[in-house]
Length: 193
Image (cartoon, rainbow, N blue to C red; front, top):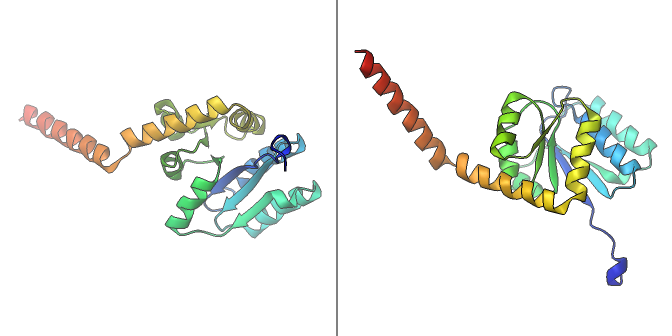
């Protein structure tokens, strides 16, 4: 292809973990399907086992809209393969619940969108990813769209997420924080004696 006619790279979205009603993969699928209908060049991969019923429902919706090639299901991966999948994606979504995997994604310098549960809101305040209003497909779609279209914003979220994980969630930092808490508890107990 000539340079100006090169095909745009597909923006790859993933969701990892069990595919069940607790994790709401249907919400991710619905938001992505809306964006595909708008003409966006994106794909979606679910990584993890789970409900065959949910998997079939999602596949059917994509097929009915002629987007069968834009959806993929992969069983659980080894930690090494999962890390590779994170690095090959452009975005990871956890539409429901909270997941420690959000920290792994951030450590790979990738953005994550999480449901606005307290733990996720606290992570976002620290600088890890974005939250959306739980169950609000329109809000989820808007957050995906902003990351897809605004390269500066995308890079800012990636860099902030990485820096936050590197500073706040390394074993060294967690160990120091834990030791400080233990020291404070001992001092407090000794004051009472």
